[in-house]
Every structure is written in C-alpha cells, then in structure tokens.
Length: 186
Image 1: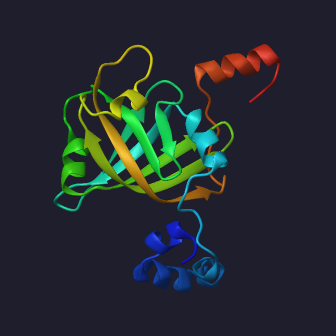
Image 2: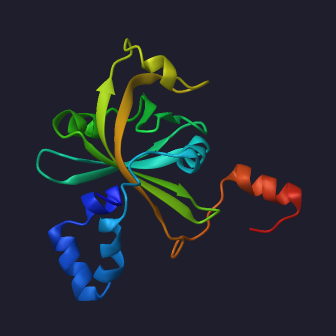
Image 3: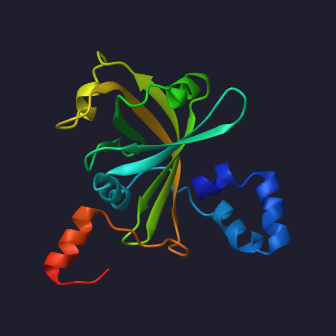
C-alpha cells in the first residue's frame, strides 16, 4: 500500500503517460510508502469546514462523466468521521443527473477550491443517497434558506492536495470586504 489516491488514479495507462513524459520515477515512490491519504485528518477537516462550495463528479450509465457545482453556507459539506463526508442536497433545477448517476455507480470525485489561498483538495469516494427520514440527515442539516431534498453520504477512499500552480486567485464579495476593511490588497 502507499499513497491511496495514487493507487486509484495511477492506472496502467496513466503510468505509461508518466513514463513517456518523464515523471514516473517521482511518482513511483508513493507506491512503497506506508498507507496514507485514505483518512481525513485535522488539516483536511479544517479546510472542508470553511468551504462554501465544491465540484462533484459522477459517472453516468453511458460512461460519460458529469460535473456539478454544489454550494451552500460555509461548512455545509461535513466531515462525519475520518472516512466519511456528508452534505444536505438542496432543491435545484430538478434534473437529478448526479442523483441518478450515483444510484447506478457510487464512485464520485470532489474538487474543493480555496481560490484566495490557491489551494485545492481532491477527494475520491463512494456516495449514497439518503432520504429525508434517515437518521443521519439531522447531522447534515444547515441553517437557513434552501429546501433540503435528500442527503449525500460519501465514504472517502482517498484524497490528495494539489500544488498551487495555475490557480488564479478569486475572491468572494465577503472576502473582498474583509480585505478592504483590513487595508490589505489581494
């Protein structure tokens, strides 16, 4: 075992591409390290707790990937324990593409961004949909606004932090106001 994210993502074709492009040696060392990046720690939990959005990728029955933005109040994506995430799924445009995909293929990928600090966290997991009457739904509830239609619980398989290269800083109105009040510049 080793870096769990690399074990999942670095398929034979990815390893061939790494070899052709000259990066395989650097990544091969991940395969011989002690098991890691399979349980969320304090750093990941802290990062997740202040996110107000993330991107969720699922795969449909035809094999096509689908990426959808999920947003809510800060902390709406919850770390339930070191291997489980969950969030209240709010009523949206009622296409239910992610919901349908997850019922047929539970594999998902989450992409969490912190644009001002040029940081990103990638998470691979297995999702399941829970209904409004499920006992865990109370742990996913958020204050205010949108109507919760269901919950999504994700068993974390692996995660990885990405380098900041090529992340353009972006700021919410709240972040800009805080910077302006502190006399700082982005």
